Length: 231
Image 1 (cartoon, rainbow, N blue to C red):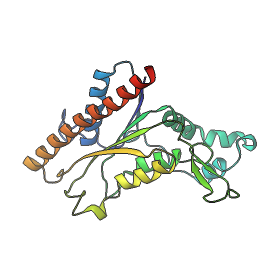
Image 2 (image 1 turned 90 degrees about the vertical axis):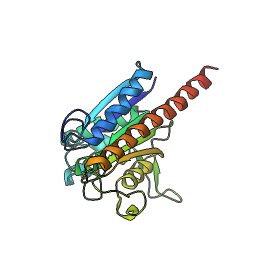
Image 3 (image 1 turned 120 degrees about the vertical axis):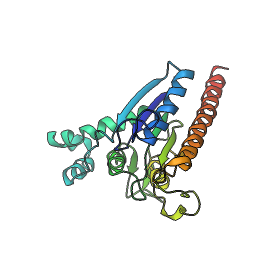
């Protein structure tokens, strides 16, 4: 079975296909998960809504605790890292991460950046040894393939070409998760949110269709891998 970790990061409640002013990324994420579950109903789904319940930003105490070897941590350090441990555990268990991440001011929402800061952690998701020859850092989530799907939305349009240099969403996520070993990524985005009308409707329809194609593509990869193991 596959474990799917679904994360929503939009501050908007609801889905744009069900209510006015609902979130486009919640819409796309739910569409992906619903189609996946229809094809593989026995897979495990873990859901985390950081838009509604954002992790706190890391603090000085968090950093002190994270960089203290586990055997030397004081009780308050374990408490400071409790949420981080839970978030890392969810990520480690996941085979497929589906992240609905809208663009806010050219980058990811602060809530999703806080999630990244909680899960990119020395000793849990990356290793560090200053005496190691070559690069002293290495990824720890390389025990098996983990795939990342980024579902985004933007107010303007052209962030894949004319405004490419201003798009810090997908690359920012890919960089952080690639650093810990999750390098196979896919992305779908809707645009024209601030324009509305036919342009937005067309972009959403194209994003919906792209999500459906991506689900089929990844299902074929997972089912093919399962068949190969069973052979």
